[in-house]
Length: 160
Image 1 (cartoon, one colour):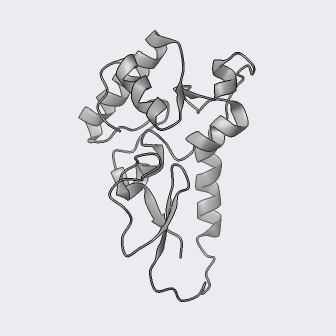
Image 2 (image 1 turned 30 degrees about the vertical axis):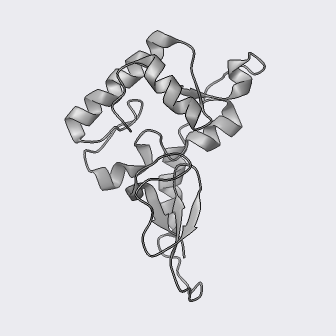
Image 3 (image 1 turned 135 degrees about the vertical axis):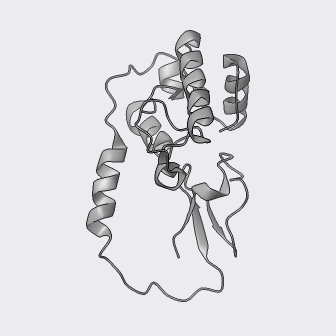
């Protein structure tokens, strides 16, 4: 995540990528300030609503925008911390309720599936998936930045 100092700057950047930001400017500014604290503390912008480990590799899924943002937006109308909201929420067509932390269930699933294996086939180049937005690409290395959501290359996982 870039170092955004103002609500307006962050909102403008998000809108360029097709996302909507919570209209509560003070709330959003407090989240942005907290993300910047985490940048100073850890060297990366971990979500301030989750406990970061200080190990970037372990926390890649919670660097803002987190891997769970889009699914939360689709299912609940907002991401876990409430920074991003859906267009329906913004227009007042949908109200917000509590949003469960998907990271807990995802970590449990990863532990239980670690023993799974199998050959998926041979490809000429690996397939990478952006963990934030789901963008797929076939190439030797993941892109430096996701062309869709602008996530850094470390936010990609090789899936094939």
